[in-house]
Structures are given as C-alpha cells and as structure tokens.
Amino acid sequence: MQPLEAGEPRTIGAYRLLGRLGAGGMGRVYLGRSAGGRTVAVKVVHPHFALDEQFRARFRREVEAARRLGAQWTAPVLDADPDAPVPWVATGYVAGPPLSDAVTRYGPLPVHAVRALGAGLGEALHAVHAHGLVHRDVKPSNVLLAVEGPRLIDFGIARALGATVSLTSTGVSVGSPGYMAPEQIRGLDVTGAADVFSLGAVLAYAATGSEPFPGDSSAVLLYKVVHEEPELGDLEGELRDLVAGCLAKDPADRPAPAELARTLAPGGATVLVSAGWLPGALEREVSRAAVALLDLEPQEAPVRSGPVPFSNASLPSPRPGTFGPPSVPLPPDGPPPPADGGARIALTTDAGQPGARRGRRVSCTLALAVAGALAAVTVGAATLGDWFPGGSRNADDGAASPPAATASEPSGDTASPDALPAAFAGTWKGPVTERGGLPHGTVTAVFTRGAKGEDVVRLTHRLDVLGTTVVCTGIGRLVSATPDELRIRERTDPENAGSSLCTGGEADLVLTLTSPRTLRYQSHEEAAGTPQGTLSRSGG
Image (cartoon, rainbow, N blue to C red; front, side):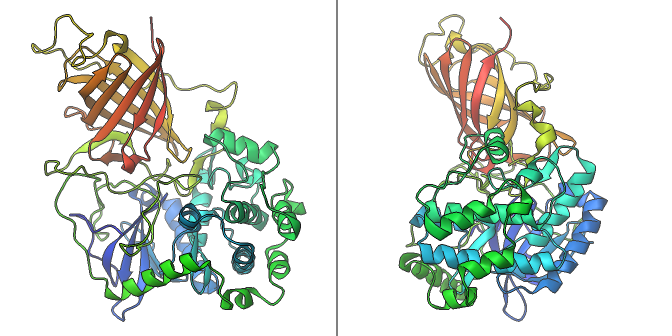
C-alpha cells in the first residue's frame, strides 16, 4: 500500500482513507475504513469516464445490480455515489493478494487449490449471471486469494464500462489480452459464456504458472485466442479436460459455471476451502497481512515529485493521476513485490526519484486508464488494423521541432563519450508497448547535437484511444553516451506540458542503436508501465 500523496482525498463518502492500494483501468483504488470500523476498498473513477453521461447511467445501474448480488465468492458492493463529480464505489476489502501476484511469488497452485479456486469462481459467476450481469474481465488480477476462499472483484463495474465503450467507441472492447473470449475480441454479442472462457484461462494460469495464450504483444495474444488452441502445459486428467472445455472457441461448447463448480467440488466450494485450500507459505503470508490491517492508520507521503494525484472526490475538477494494478499490503518481512507482467496491466503509481526537487513535474510518457487495463480496456478488433497485416498508422505524430542549439553545444566532435554520437542525430519513430504487452502509442524522438548534461532530444508520445488523442511531450538530457547506447533523463517540455493524462515524475531512458536505421527504446518509468519498442529512422 502506498501513502496518500498531497492533493489526494482523505475521505470519500463516509470512509476515511488509510492509503492507496494502486490503480487500474478505471481509476485509483484506496483502502478505507468506515465509522464502524469496517475495512473497505474505495475505487474512484477516472475523470475521463466521469465526463461520459452514458457511462454514468450504466455505472449507476450496474452498481445497483451488484449491490443486490451478495454472492459468497465476490467482494460485496457496500456503497457508491455514481452522481458525484468523480463517481466512486466501495466494496468489502479482501485481505489477500491477487492471483497474479501469488503465482509470481510462490509459483503455480497445487491441484486441490486450483479445484477450490475454480469451484468458488464458478459459483460466483453463476450468481453474477443469474442477476443479469456479465463480468467481461475475469483475469488473475481480478481474483483475490483470501484464507476463507477466492473472491472475484469488479464485476458490475466492468460491464458498465463495456456497455459504454461498445456504444461510443467503435473497435474498443472490455477485457484483457489473453483472457478475453473470441467473441469478445470479434465484437460479437457477449454472454456469460465469455466469462467461462476467461475463467478457463485463469485456471490454466493458476495451475501452470503460464498463460494459455502466450505472446509478447496485444495483437499476438488476441490473434492466438481467436485462431489457435491453448497451451496447457503439464495439466492432465479431469482438470485438463475441464479447462480445455472452458476454452472452447464456440460459446455453446463451454460448460455453464454451475456445472463447472459441481464437477470440481461435488460438495460445494466451501467444503474444499474449509479444509485449508492455500499452500502453507501463501496462507501464512495472507494471514499476517490480514492481522496487519488492524493496526493501520492513515499514511501520509512526504512532498516530492511523482504522479499527479487525484484531488478530493467532492471537487468538480480533479487533477489527473497515473494508473496501475492494485496490490495488497504485505508485511515488511514478506517476499519483495515482483515486477508486473502477463496480462495484468503494468501501471504503478510511484514514479518519484529519490532526492528529486519538490514540486510538480510531468513526464511525457503516457499513463492512461484507457491504455494499459488498462486493467480493463484494450483495443478491440476494429482497431487491430494498426497491428495486423494491411493495417496503417496515423503518420501525424504531433512531433515538435528539435530543441534549439545553444552556445555550449560542441562544434564538431560527436565521437566523444560525453557528446551525442552522430549516428543518433535525426528523427526516429515507432510503436511502443508496456511490459504487460499492451500498446502504449507511438514515440517520436528528434535528436540534435549536444554534450553530456545538455538537452539532446525532444520526445513526443501519442496514443489514440476511446475517440481521444493524447499527446505528451518531453525533453531529454544526455546522461551518458557510447557509440551505440544513450542514457537519457526525460522531463516535461516547459513550453508544452501535453495532455493532463500524462504521467508525473522524470523518466530514465535507454536508447540502443541496433542498426543504422533502428533504435531500441526502453523507458524505466514504472508509472507508465516501462514501455519499450523499436524506433525507425525517418527520412534519409
């Protein structure tokens, strides 16, 4: 859990906030406590969605449906205000890590744990579907592992978002690459069978530690889901057959959630869970984290640079923030948190540099609720022309002119290790992706001559999504140089800060010359999902 930054709300509704759990495709998630002492998770919707009245209407309906759900294996919706300037919803807090974190730290779950997981989630989906809801985003980071059993989160909200974008933005769908059903990717009618497909992918990941549709980009993942068979590794016997059935391409061939739950746990999921379902080390970690909650008090962060936080949720014009996957607080002696990966969208919330000067700084790297989901939002079939053969990209990247030369620039020797090598000079452009594989727009880098400590590159980051074009611009200072590698410290362009949806904090970049016309781009900015890609030289 991260401490609250200056400008972030201290209360939302009737809940006192203790800290920030993280962020996802829709906004920031806070740990809160009611006046009666109940611990809750409060999700504050990103202002981008708050401006959409269709989203608000659907959010209101879906939250009301979710409040009536009351399923055993879900996190209950306790309170919400869809009419607030920044809509929010409070759910019961689950003291347990996401499945994605648990598998990364402890490895695949044993068979009995996978059966308990599948039975609990099957019963949860049966209840969700019975109330007319479709989750649309069942994935490892939306499954929490508590001692008392698994919990499925974010069901009603995911559908509200999906209904909105399906009507307002052609080619956008809700889901996460590798876990979306084929019909969901194709933009066809989505029923509860899509959730079963996603559940099958989740169970395969839990049992093997690998995604059933591996790939290094969103386009590859989505293509494999539609056209290729899943890779189920060492799964065998009845469990393999059940998972394969869930991952059938035809929705009609998949089992119903209740049927799946009965097969995995004939006596009900409660029987398996009550016998102790988590591996010993993981169970001890979860138990200690739950106990640690009792002593939590509101946490304040020192003033420093970093992501721009939300303002109080009661104000009409919140400041923008960066977004990323939620995490659960763990005791300090537990294993270190892993680097994010897989389908979980890689946007963390702390990009501050130790020793940095105080005050707001906005880097140019994109960090959008709609770009990396974006725990929940990913570019759908109609937009995939940009990545599949025959597609095209918008050539207008909004790149600004290079930084003006200064009197201190070297006049000739670019071979010096303290100066920009001549091979880098010029304009480079190409697509980048986050470490989780989601597209992160197009980067244009314009290099000019300069010495160590001087500005040598102007960068423009552009992303077109949800009918919105977001452009972030920045300037890079040369930290070090070799004939084939540059290390750059990027900061906001003082003359053009770009969109309010750009991230905060400076970014360390590494640019490697892989050929005379290709340049490897790597950003180490955690707040933006450490995007990387290959840029090509433009012009002669």
